[in-house]
Image 1 (cartoon, one colour):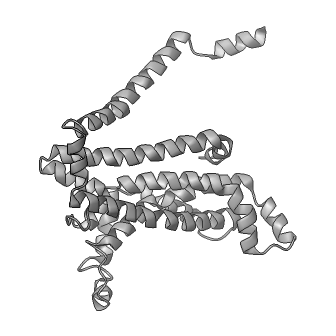
Image 2: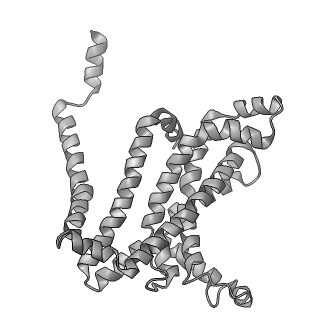
Image 3: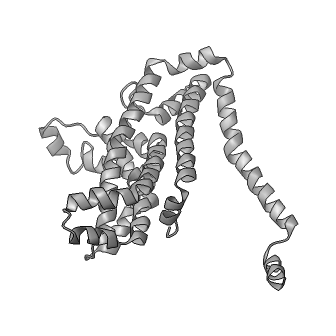
Length: 285
């Protein structure tokens, strides 16, 4: 009886709990749900036919293809290098390890616009590699490679930051046991390491994909805003909105929001099916 009374004393009053929950719901409705509903309402305000016609315009189709093309490159690259980076950080001790961990978080700390300007300094007409690029007729800026590089920089930490705490908590005992039984490095990784981290890896990939599809700042700097060539969906939306084509802008925005919702649904499914495994990876964040 005293334990129950002690727990009750530690809890907030019922009115305070209700007020905080209501405030949280109100904030979420005002800042997340309501704007999304307004975008969908504006997108379909003139009917489904107008919405579909806006999305089938050549520039819109090109922007969608470029967005998906960028994501298709960024995801496997980040998944592979993020996994190897997490493995190196959690399984080996070396000089500069803390500096490397700090550099991993650099894209979180640096503004995306600054990241884009750094690429301009490297690959622009007067950049460090300008002469080399001209000699080999390679174009980075105002082309797809620049967009991919900018997106890679912005999204790199998502996978590795999901895997590092998970691999730290799991430890290396199973991997050492596999090596002691004669397994090669690749066999150990494929049969022991990868199965243990697969759900954390998938979660990081989902976060990476959502960020890659919605990236604007860095891509805006390096893309050149060339219609039908270097405009991703976020850039296409900005151009339409600046041209007062609100119907087209909201139609493209609804498509981008739909892709984000698909990612969110996959995230909820992953958490509901494998919540325990993911909770371990978040415990040390």
